[in-house]
Amino acid sequence: MQFHDTDLYYSDKKFSFRVLRADSVITYSERLHCLVFNCIRFYVREGWSSKYRYPDIDDSQIQALRALEQSLDDESSLEDIDSAFHKACLALLAHEKDDFDTSRLLDSNFFSPVICFLVVHCITEAGGTPNSSGISNVVAPIMYAIRTAIFKVILERKKKEKISPHRSVLIAFFY
Image 1 (cartoon, rainbow, N blue to C red):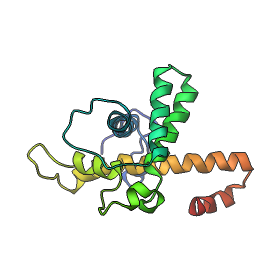
Image 2 (image 1 turned 120 degrees about the vertical axis):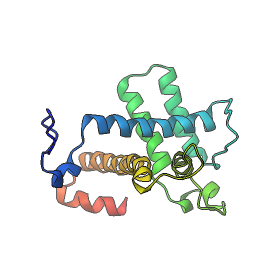
Image 3 (image 1 turned 90 degrees about the vertical axis):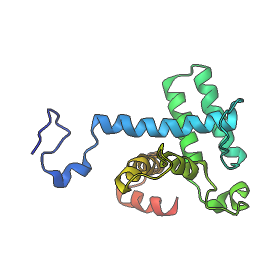
């Protein structure tokens, strides 16, 4: 059994999935940043050079991406940048196909840049797909980001509305 010099790592492998190690945070945040800034390059900035085209998204999603880009360009405070980043993540991650006309009208399962991003990043250089664990390594950070974005909304709402911890679980189902 391998032991690490960190308090965050449990030697019992049964519980290691509960641990968020520093290297996991870096890997997961890199994948999320890659997605968000890919979307900024495609939807907000001029000069997208790839032949690949993401699907159309709603104006509210574009505005959230534009606000993030503006907060970065203005060198806003870290709190403002964090808020803009969170709003951009929510705009991209927390919606269903029927929420926006742009995605509802598409006759495709590829209605979101998030879905397209994941599929494109699951294609190997040889044109195939990796084994299932390779796909999981691509998808897991985005799934974690989705849960985290929604959880942050729940925590903010809980704090704002002074909701008991027992009721906050119910909020997740009705958000």
